Length: 167
Image (tube, rainbow, N blue to C red):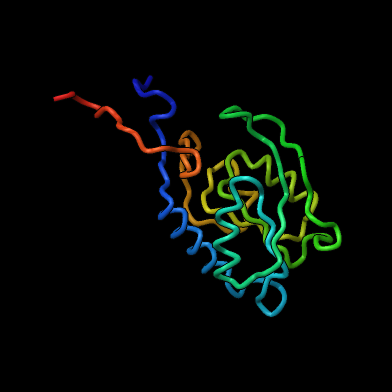
């Protein structure tokens, strides 16, 4: 048994890091769309996918951006995923040419739900955990399933005690 609290096995992401990793995801996705390598649109899974989607849209010069709002967490507790707001039906179709972006795939429940709605879309996440990996097509960094990722939009800077000693 570990002496660490659950939040201490964390992967802290800075704004600089999410920007670099989102750009790296854009580089992997560049030229991979079905329309001569281009993507028709980007759909961000709100809320976590919005910052990466903005960066990827800029890098790939995609001007059509929409969102799908899926709730699968209540604070840090996972729950059944449900769609709160869907993107424009005329845009989406079966998902062909659509790049769906999220910050993280954890259990895969969110992406599983969205993939059922848009089976031909391409799913990209910046970070992936092993349980959710089968649901994502392209990602940048894999972290262990028991790691909690702290995104910059969820944090404030503050002092932290050292692990050993206080001298």
